[in-house]
Image 1: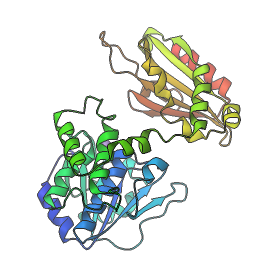
Image 2 (image 1 turned 120 degrees about the vertical axis):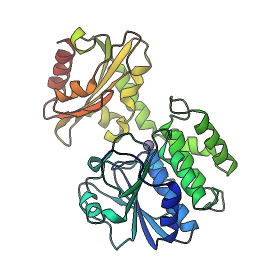
Image 3 (image 1 turned 30 degrees about the vertical axis):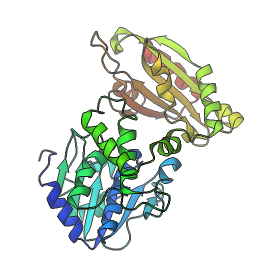
Length: 349
Ligand SMILES: [Mn+2]
């Protein structure tokens, strides 16, 4: 069965209004859109007088969790996975429809297929939800959920606390802003700006949100970035893998201990060298002393004017990893020096 819409937003809104206990979940390692989508649906149900709660599999960054307020969301540790407690007559899966992104809860969902509904904006997915609306023209899943909230006849400003925070609109804006790179990516079109305007009119404090989401790093993270950037080198990639300049950075265990930064504070770092015009791909090599492995992150730019690009999914596969054409990762049980040498070899091969 193709991964397409097989019902209407109005029908899903009706199901939600008529439900008694609703569980809302999303893909493992939720990002801003996933968390925003979960919070928005839980809050819309609450405003409609329906019991609802969120259930997500971590890791989930603290700056996202800060947006939960009093909204009930259970966070599950993937290393000690548990299933939802209690019974629910409706389960909502947002921002994904792929079994591979729902590993922990998949067996539980498969036992309740007829009770699962889905709302998503991705092109690929499986038969996770019996009834679903999939709209790839939405810049974020929350952009799709604006219509759901409206169809439920719930005010976008509902749920706000005394300070005007933690409303449905705020959750929707979190997904919209983060999935569109704060309205810079190609998926920020006229409609996304229109939605943003409506959410701002509903009381969203975009400046406070930007600060909380994008300017809440610890100093240790920036000090670690300085270490990574000072390790930056450039490699001429072979024509076979696509050619051009590849940026390589490395972080040793001592970089973490001396700056006090944590392993998870490397997130996003691999993207920094992509700001350089000539760089076609970027590789970050990180020593994870505690796990006894060396981690690799790969990013590449979309095809240049000459149509050439570097397929980092293929590159990561040479290290036993994988991902997407332009974003991938791998892990090796070898020293950082061995792995870094292998990276240079593979790039030049
Ligand atoms: Mn999304």
